[in-house]
Length: 313
Length: 313
Image (tube, rainbow over the protein chains, first blue to last red):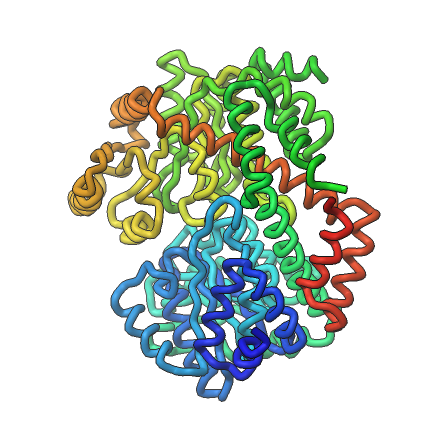
């Protein structure tokens, strides 16, 4: 097992893939490896990328990964967007673009599948970030759709959050207003050759202005045409500049803290829930209690009391 | 407190609103009330409604609620879609439509705000379903965007799941493929007067055919123009027919079981996490441990072991 952790730290793609699977299954072996890997994590620049469906996130991520490779950086990509080609819902062009990436041993792509009620989407994401970080990736990209709460929670652990917008999607501005705005460190307006581009830019600029008026720094807005690679070097520069600016600040430490806290919360949540709902000794009792809830012999809160009294000190 | 539960069961909107707030805050008073309310829940038809942004879900829900009111049914609406006018991100027309609904004392609308890492989006949803159910609502509609995992989990507790599609949004078909398909009991194709309607219908029909070939029943597809109220009575009939067909079946019991299991899981999760991360006695220790994780003196898994050993029997 220690051997696996060693291989992960050398960047061996097969070892990374196996390690991630172990972590997803929350196996006891995973724990031992994760302990070793933790000592080597914390160097990667974690970039959260979010935006509505149709914003062209996948193409943009492919191009951004390519750009980082040109700059000699190793890249990990975690897709937790169910509509992303990285995680399965692909248009042919996107898939081809992604396949090209996947042949590069210094790019590791992992999509996170959907999970059951007890697992929760975010379950293993933090572990996967930690694994890719420890494997020597300089950049770890976490891709989500900026809609679900779980997905927004995940984005919060990123060092730099990129929000991808696109002209003509009125909804994109809507969703910014609905909570994404406050987490954006950089905006990319993709498909900058499309009609409506000027208007979308103006809208975002006025939003950014609004926040700047509150005394906060102006969030950069980068126009790109991801399909043609246009604006991608500028975008990479801007993301890097954000990281450099952040480094050593209180906010940077806060982001890191949040990341480790999220990981700790998840480990504890998973262990507790697994114990209560998966282990035979509890599972039978839980099933009985649910039966009683169904038959109105018991209510869910009293049932919870009963289980907790058996579990807690 | 018992008085509050009594008032909720009489359908008093203020009491319902207060009860929901108590449940959201997981207050100890809420527990006592929820125990009483549980004895009266289980009669409502829980309808999950999901679909991509721009599918016109809010207009459709407004019209559906109106239709159910005409049929003498009381309606509860829970919006956990951040882009929904019910939960804040409104276009003017949608808002007006919703305001009209809100003046009817037999329609109760609640939007669920976003939550912190420990709360989880789904935190109080199950309680809110239970409260509205016990308040005498015949129909409880839960609205989500069919993208986030947490949102999909919520939909799983519905007796009947309606997936709203719209012509011309290639993405809508994509997202169906990506997991929504298996949970749809009824499809509504909204904006049936739009170009591309025939094609969208054909695409969904062939998807439905595909599943029917596996021996499962053909999922009904209802064209609607929600804005004009067209197709809404048929849609309501189809949803009712699904419920009637389901009643007494094994699958129906399974849905109900799932709903109470989800509620139980959430109560336990919330209580455990609140204890570990909110109570002073643990909170300080957790902060210390996160510091040690940051400084690589400890890894997250060992920190979790330490916390759990303090908490568990």
